[in-house]
Image 1: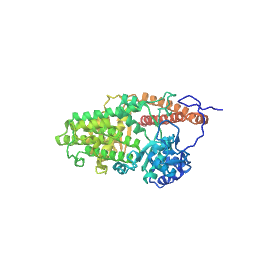
Image 2: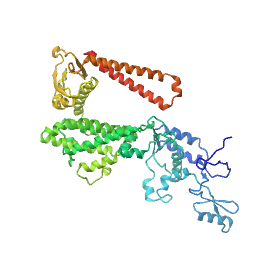
Image 3: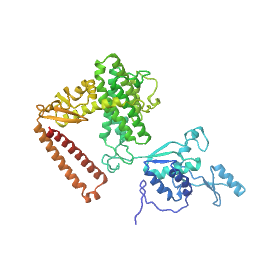
Image 4: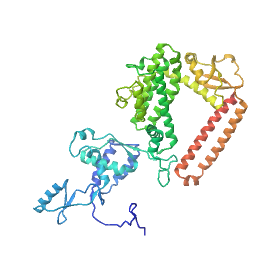
Length: 549
């Protein structure tokens, strides 16, 4: 037979039949079930309510006795003849015993203690002064959102629901957010025996607390466990550094908050565009947070702060700050400071320390703390479709040229000649307004524009063509790179990617592999296959560009 041993004491555990105290859990479960079925309390993600229902609809009497040396004693006392007196206190038990026996008697309290989850079930109201009706209890019960793990839905969530409805007449929270399980980078559950434990204190010490917080938020996709890798935390440390450097750039260029500044009054298209983008980012972050989609909220502010603000807006406005007239420079400085403030507000829940520091530093030492500031207004009042269309076209043009340069291994120092054929006349002013930015960011010598049938002008031999809306963008590369050599390189890379795809498809089509391999290994191979297919597609597009010229 199997002999059980205590995991702490190492001695044999001997069964001992004895009386236990139970709670009529089925009666308590009724109102708690109804609260979730009616939608008064909701689970996020919703599928976890099925786990809750499974437990509650099949609930058994709840044994609340524990034979431990610590804990809350069972409130039951025994008389000389074994009569049981359950009361709120020893004094009340003594009075009940005296009434029963006709004279005072000595009582012995039950030596068992309450189950930990029984005591924990009282947490939402017992911590606020209950059973007294304190101001704190009136103010803070019921609470709003409970954030917890799936493995204690029955042990804690369900029991708080039962106790809260029984004693307070109202569910203790309106939303239960079930967070993901944090695993290692391969998807395995962390374990000391496996040696794959990641200590969050070590990560915070190495990369900063803000970086770790943002990483966990960015990976917290509903319904999926978090695969925590040190490289991801390092990446978001770089994001924090990018933000810090952007704030430093703003300080150097005298971009300080202007009291009473209203972005609606902006005249420059680039400033109207960034204000519109900031408003959209605030809306996206707010909607995601309200939906408990923390990864989408983190992604929205990350892409706006790093991509839109740092990589594009600050680059677009450098000529204005350096050579623009006084009015344009003043408007741009005020807009830049306002947008940075919006970024700090939106980032604060994710990265509280660096944002609080920058909030104070950017205004020469503000009296108020960022945490006490209002959340950005997201009514869409700053939306500007005209400015969006113009700047989005400019960004696409620069991005496409950059992509071709990267795909074709064009030397970074090479200044290309760019021709645009068939450009809509309405977009001609866009090209002129941002000529300096386009040439600088795409590393171009000059840009020329011709009509649709301009010549039936022959496209120079060795040119790459890019189609953007109605226009054709022509990049002559002859003499800058060896097109035949580049074509050969791309063909070899495509063949290599195809071979990798073939091996992975064969593995993923092997039923034996799928049945036996751990889930994390299957997921890793599935991702490798997707990456290889994406790489092959990208290489194929580059080869098509060369072959089509």
